[in-house]
Length: 359
Image 1: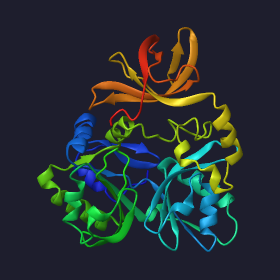
Image 2 (image 1 turned 30 degrees about the horizontal axis):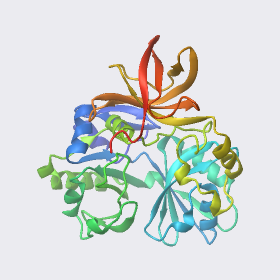
Image 3 (image 1 turned 135 degrees about the vertical axis):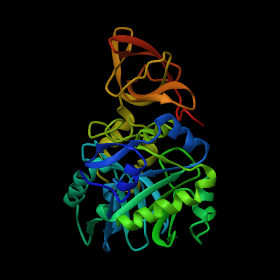
């Protein structure tokens, strides 16, 4: 297994470590619910260095990124970030990703489990003067999330973090290290930052320690991937491999807002246009009426008729309700619809609800 630059720290902190996307990663430290609430109440730090980063350079870099992603890259100025997706020609989703406009090049941030697949697919789509470089192993990535994340990080940089708008970034120094400081995150918190820095173990550990010293007054906590999943689900953020994959398109996955057919040609455009007119199912949120948690892959019913499948489910520590996402057939997926989920050979009642679950 690969190890991130923070691996020694995770072990010292007694994290529960598991294999994830080829890395040894912390699932939890003191417990998922406590870590979840630490982010919602104050500030938490996630090691997400397993994520992938690809640099796209060359005079045709814009045209290349515009072709392989669904969102409109022409809207990005230097310092802007865009949430997007990459699709196969049949409309199936290769991955969801972030596109960073770094001025004279782009950086694409992709999911950890898809790095090899995505990079190969990008290479297969190359044309013109474009060069790709997979820099994933050179980057440490920390997500510092929660209302006190700005006050914590501001102690460590001369950059005025309050001036970085949501989905924008700057190149700057943090705790004396060169970094990309990005106003982004996958927790639903509006005050949130992601820090891209060197993967050198000594530098990584110095940065982690500086952040935790700065956040001591806010009771800053290390957060594992378990709470990252429950946090993202409360805001109905999609997880590749659960809520979307090559068998789903952006329309039925509820990602029409990052799909811009008017921008010109891009992979999967024709199929996606047809899906807008003829989609037979939709990814929707639900709340379980019972104390049982719905899990990925469980079947959804209306009476004796199977109408869908659960993609994600967990307890919401903030709502204290069991929530989830599911693909449900048209005719059964409107807000307020009553459904049943087959959990351990028993049909449990649930209600289709608006997302995000937290507002």
